[in-house]
Length: 316
Image (cartoon, rainbow, N blue to C red; front, side):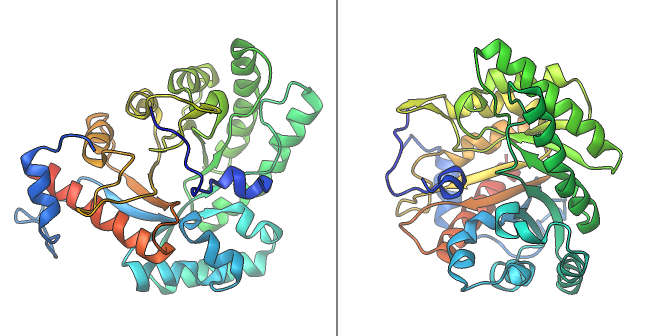
């Protein structure tokens, strides 16, 4: 199992203050540059690549990049046509119609699609206190409305709760169901990420989605967020496999790379096989969270890795 790294800063920590054997074909794919243009058979790509805003949270937090410039940066600096926002990075603008209109205009001007908004800090959707749980659901309403305005398909939320696992399942499902029913009236999905605690137990989170029992509620499997407790990690490959039947988005978490451009903690080829075997053909979001490379370099390294994985899997 993986051990937590002191140099990695998660979204949760930010908000609270707080080599495997490689197949020959895979090694060859990593060693050569990614081909440009269409595939030889002009087939649609196995998956598309988007950029999660958290990958640039240090630049945004330092004022080196403005939130409104994120779509242009995704297109011009990284050649990507789809973005995933983080609510904490424009939290005071969630109901600012002029601001959201400008953000949408900049997306349109750069040919960039808004996919989802990652929502943190709005209370526990599975809070044992029914009043607090209802308040958390209502706190998310503005993000549903912002997502609809921007043209997103979903908001990403957390399945936070308290108590024994079975009780947490019941409470989280209750809050998620209420939020999903509201979001569905706007044509917006509610997707849950494995994001610490019980939510990083793939089997438990899958059981929550089944308990919600609504087509608008699904998952956003993250390749790296499987720490269920201090020093205790859930198997990331098993967890992603358990969450993929409900996936409406996928997060390609990256931190460290070796000299061959492979992610040191996650076998991307193995992981993307799990993703594709589940029938998923949507966007896979780059979420670089490391510190060994500058943010821009980490994003490029993750993009190159995903492109090479896609090329290797397309050839099989």
